[in-house]
Length: 588
Image (cartoon, rainbow, N blue to C red; front, top):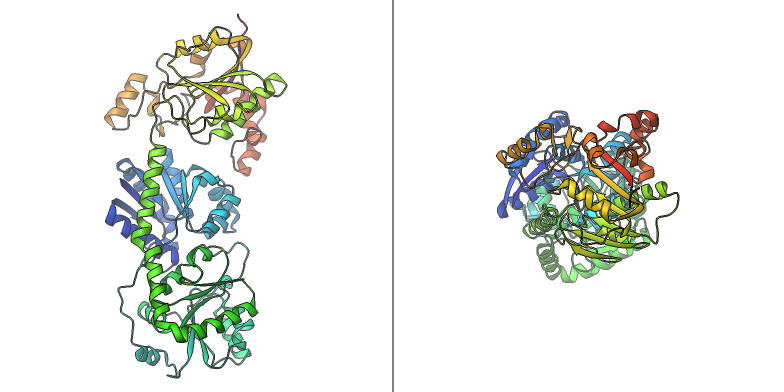
């Protein structure tokens, strides 16, 4: 498999996503062909990096089997790549890249750019839950945790560490918190609610910087904790590894903060691979990093009494079991979260996803079918003036079977395709056939040809057979992409399909893009196949009121569409991106 990995956050810039993206890319490259487009210059470079990544990524995507985005912010890059490529795009989600409260980000990224992503990989079950709450379909989300690896930098000796940090070489039991000093990390809360209750033999070290730095210093001074709580500030990698090696217990007392979630407990794993166990809040993505009793313990967030009790219990336990505990914590982290193992999980998921997403030889695509079934029923119900139920229905182009299965709950559905790629098979019968349908005349009340006709070899026969099996006054739901629309949805390219059909196919083959023969129709073509007087277009109504027909459209765009007069939309049917017609069979 050839993978294109795109990251907008990459070292040498320091950060959790930066470190995760770099380690993942490095370990993926050890196992597969993994090309990279990465931003090494931080947030300030994003205005230049994003357009550059869109251009370079679109070029490199031609040689890749799949694209993997390092976080949700990069979804804009994936969205543009999808305009020019039919390659699957997966995106890692960390948490804050879903919940960031910026209104523009929520409207464009979460509600628009995310819609184009084929697969999301959440770093924790908590992140998956947040993604579902944000409107991402659950079936598009998998969970793979972050990984960890032993640092190549050797730690200082305990004596040298004490000297570097100017610590008193007393026989102290040392607690450590390390990370960005923001409210959700709970460091200030811990100082104000727990630290002053700790016995004098316990020392609390805090490594890191951030917005709460001054408030933490003030709290230490206000509570006279200068000898029990020491704020170290930012530390280098060697000091970090030395702290993990020579302290006794890692503390991450996170508290809930709206729109600021902990996507995963990566620092607990970094501590754990050095043999340092953790006590952490049973909150958000932290829960996926801690296995009770294996590499740490979980406590309820904001429960000062419970946290104090657990610290004192584990102090007694670790004093008598430090070496064995350290070895088992380290072994658990390596066996469960080693980056080599995690990278293989990514490869396995992407390979499985690639197989599911690979081009099929049947009539119709197989994504998001249930929502399409609901849209079809909505159009049929409006046409008939009553609910579509207890009818004989023929669905041409079964695909994964979800449309047939959904409509079959209240109707007698028969479904046909040229190959069997069903994933759902309840509530309908299935037959294999080509354009010639194996049914008697006047057999069905409703026939559905949903994005099928552009795939068939003989379009005239396809329509003739539909008319033959439809009962008198029976209805055909007919949908197909418009050849005049600039973007061709099957090959995900612009304008090339304006070429004569044979030249279009030949050009695709020349560019090594060809997958199957696609023959697109314009409005004139459709009217020549189906009598104009018996056709009613619904595409204008759907464009004007997309949410009424279960179409996912940003609210700002829908407000604009709502204001377009329906007469204007109906008169411009010839340029609609997709044709949706109801045909009534008025002949026996």
